[in-house]
Length: 154
Image (cartoon, rainbow, N blue to C red):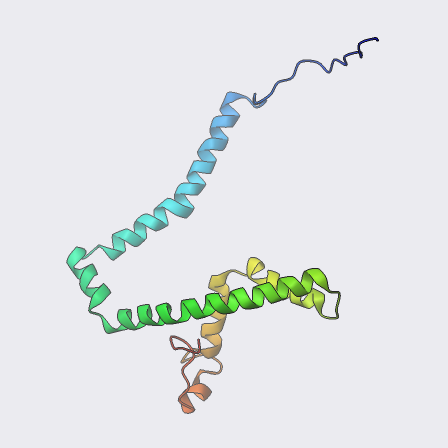
């Protein structure tokens, strides 16, 4: 029985970078700069503004301001409802998309993928511009005494 011939592919350089050291350092510096500008600076700014008047003022605004209490209560009410609906409709949509071919399947996939393409900030601004007090439908909704933004339907 003959041993199988070994094929030589040359020396392997596993885990060794091929770029020069200065290129590596420039890329690392660029990544750290982007991280600092897009993440660290905004987080520091939020904390600086929140505690700018002191911890006591922050505490009073957090637990004694009626608008803050209303927004926290609304969030605590709406968030679980949104989670339940997202789970139910998400499972139903996943089941439909994986098991069946039907007309409108591409439209459903597009609607599911839409939040990944459109920023939530842009979508929120669009809703405020449509349903806010000065929005397109705002005066009509106010005449009917219907509140959409910062209310339970919204």
